[in-house]
Length: 132
Image (cartoon, helix red, strand yellow):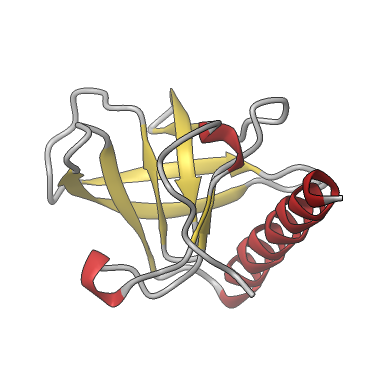
């Protein structure tokens, strides 16, 4: 049901299927352009490019790999921020930072799963409409 779209077209509507070779064990989604996720690392604003229950990728700022930071993320329709320690894993081929959540409480992980599932549903609905 879920797939990896090609790199052509609108970056804001990508849904990516996890691939074990890519080092992720969870589905990741791109926040919509009209509803970006508000987030900070140690109170520095960041721009999240994609997110899963295991971590996220964001526009590069000067951070060292293998260092730990406090991330706070506001999910749409959620009253409480997700707050977690994250580890910076490094930069990807596009020079964006990747990080993973550390010791994420089950309730927070469930909230992230709900967000990812809702984004997948939204994207599927948009795709179905465009095919009609």
